[in-house]
Image (cartoon, rainbow, N blue to C red; front, side):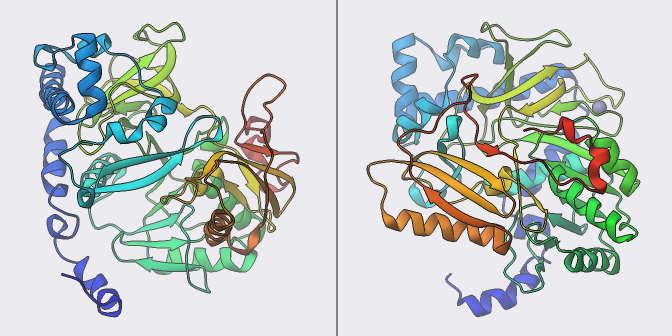
Length: 467
Ligand SMILES: [Zn+2]
C-alpha cells in the first residue's frame, strides 16, 4: 500500500505504538525471544545452533551465489560435510577489494532487488565499499541491540537520546523520532545555546539512555562543564562505532555518574559483540555470525591476550552472504569465561584499525568520520577519498575519481555532507591524481594538521586520541 507522505507522517507516531512484532517487522520478536533464551545456553548448544545456521547459509551460497558456487567447486568444498564452524578454515579469507571488484557475483540469484537494500561504508585505503543486505534485516538487528542493552537496564520501549551523526532537519536541531522512540539531537550543532537546550529537553522528557559516539558524548560533556550545567541523569550511556581511548571511559562515566556500555558491530553485519553487566569485555554473539580472530601470520588467535584481525561470516544476510570476511578491524582475545555466566567467547578489545579520526567544526565541535558514513550511493564514482583539515570549520575532501565521475557527483557529495555537518563546516573538493600515503606507508582517511580544542574535556587525555 502506498500512502501519501502527509498521511504517512501523521500515522507514523501511531504506527510505532503498535506492538514491536508488528512495527519492527516479522524478525524482531522471534529474534528477541531466541536471544532471551540462548544467553543461558551451554557452549555446546550454542555451537550446535550456530552450526545449523552456518550449514543453511553455506548450502544457500553453493546453490545461489555465483562467487561461492565457483569457489566451492574449485576447492572441492562440500557444505554438507561441514561438522563444525572451525571447518570454515578450509576456505580463503575474503578482502574488501575482492568483494568490491566482484560485487555482482556475491548477490544471491534468489533474492529479488525488492528484497534487498544497498548502502555504503568505509572500505580500505579510503575506498567506499558498497554492500547489500536483506531489506528486513532491521528487525533482527534491533532485537540483538535491545538484548545487549538490556544488560544495563534498557527495556523495549524505553526512550533514548541520540547524539550520533543523524541529520536533523529542524531549526532547533533536535526532533523526536517515533520509530526509534528517541529524541535525536544534532551533534553537528553543539553551540552553547543548543547544548543547554539539549540538556533541558533530555531532563524534561526523562530520557534514561543516551545513545551516542564516544567523541560526541565527550563533546557534549565538555560543553556542559564549560556552561556549568548539571548533566542529565542517564541509567546508561550506549556508545559504539568508535574506538574508546584510555581515559575516555573514565571521563564519561565520572562526569555523567553512570555506566558506559560499549559494543562492536559493523555495517556488514557479520560480527556483533558487546559488554555485559559484569565486565568490559566484548561478548561475541554466536547467534549473529561466526567470528574468528586471525593473527598476522594467518593462524587463529585463541589464547587470552593474542590479537589479530576480526574475520566474520554472516548467518543471516542471504542477499549478499559474506564468508570469512576480513573486517580490517582488530581484536584481543579475552578470558575464558565471565561472571555473568553467558557462554559467549570474549574479546578484551575490539577496535576499528583506522576508522576513527576526528574533524573540528567551527564551534570546536568534534566530528567523527564514522558519522560521515553514507547510507546511499553518493560515493559510488569515487576511487578513493580523504578528509584534509588545516583550519577549524574547513575541510578539504580529496577525491581520486573513477572515470565515471562527473560534476553531478561533486554536487551530490557536497549536498550529502552538508546535510550531515550543517553550517559548522565549509567543504571544498580537490581532485588529485594520487592521494599520498604517510611516510610510514599508511593510508589515512582523515588528516588533521591541528590540535584538538584545549578545553575542559582535556581530562580525556588528548594524547590518547588519534592524530
Ligand atoms: Zn559477561
